[in-house]
Image (cartoon, rainbow, N blue to C red; front, top):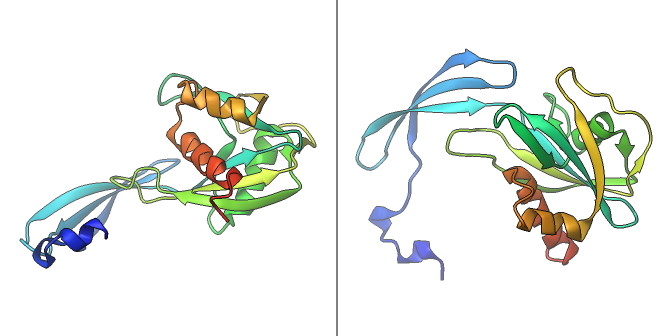
Length: 194
């Protein structure tokens, strides 16, 4: 029995009605919109800000000898370095798996034997409209040089997969979308995902 079966019909959640939607501003990596909604039951109205951005991709890049590729880079939002998996912005109309393969190659110089979509997560649905696609690339090897964007500077490292999980559990990996990806990778490795 799920919780909604315990909720009286008069209290069940309903979609808010979107009344108005207007662009506020446009920045290099996202757009901001102001949206006005009305609650379906009591008719109260509210104005909300939504950040729109292209979808993102994060790549779990695994080698045949059981290691995972990690990147360390400076992040302007926290004014510090983070330990992450490769990833980036999906171009308009680009397939998420193709974007993951492209980002992996550009950021690291690595490519793999096979790539597949493992999962999709919503980064912060309270204020963001985009999706982060988690792509699993197996059989990764170095095939060339990095092709970094102007503001990227990346340090690569390869770690045993179980050590990556341990580093996340110790709090050494703090990026929430990377932790999401590790959650799905663990489920996949344990046979709990297709």
